Image (cartoon, rainbow, N blue to C red):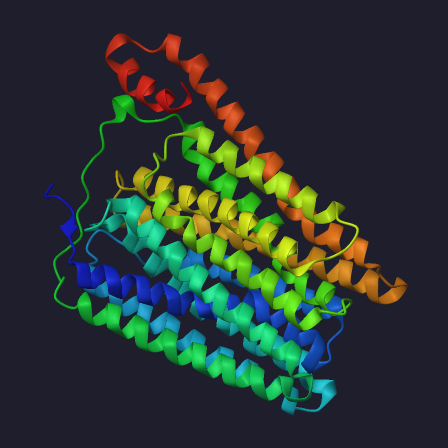
Length: 436
């Protein structure tokens, strides 16, 4: 088969910009929506959590369904058009969703459900197309590792923007709904225009997509192919407690206006500044995953065990948590992309849809759990220490799981190595070398 299409630097920049726009919609739905539903729409915490969780499940199912449309005859231009259509429809429905506070209270929950489900379905169409583009082409800067790092820089900038928006909402409670609507409209415009740019850069790539068959003799075992899926599920299930509960802890503090935005912004900055280093690290090194987990667990414990809250110390801990989470996230996407290049377009679309579906199901479970926690806190009251532990439990559990997964993967490779023949043992030793 002919080699994969080599893309230009302009296409890489357009892809990064499109991912920023898509991430703005994502964080609007994840970071801002549940806060807006409880504070401005007037929904109960449980209803808000259930509505967000239901939307995520629909998005996961729609992503898997959308992947079935991919086949061997598709082109990069077709993928560019698919991602633009999905993102444009998602932007429109998200903007309509934030008009719900203008409606009478009895019809707000049905309208939230009516609009959030189409948003998730449309988002899934654009998401699968953008994610599958990762493995279908040769990227001009450090290949899969470089484009994965740029993706997370883009998502980090989007998270940073949404964190600043939440800080603005906390500082202007009297005009919160109007401010939220302005933020959503701005995010939607950026998402639509950036996805259109990516579509235009891919318009000339009309030939059928081909893939290069990988050498299966030195390929990693099924255990290591599943590892990125397990890690992203763990990241998605646990880490949102740190960001989604931060605004509620901020409301209990005297310095709430500065503390909440400082923590969220520091977390987002951490996930961005680590990416240039992450792009240069070997994705086969399980020690890197273990180190990221150790930092997550350690910083989470330090955050929870503080008796008093301080802006600078908490912001520094949030920065470290963001760096560790960003490193682990980049490892997931780069490793999954590298493992997917041996497959054709349809199989790659299915693999990336499975990856995102696992993340979304995990996020749905996490959103439901956060909704239950908020309901308990509203019913019985919550001290600052309880909210702090609720925020930190996610990084602690995720970090411990990453350390355990890295250790078990290393042990699996060491047990497999003696059983391999001489010709196939050489690449496995290369996999183990970063541990030496």
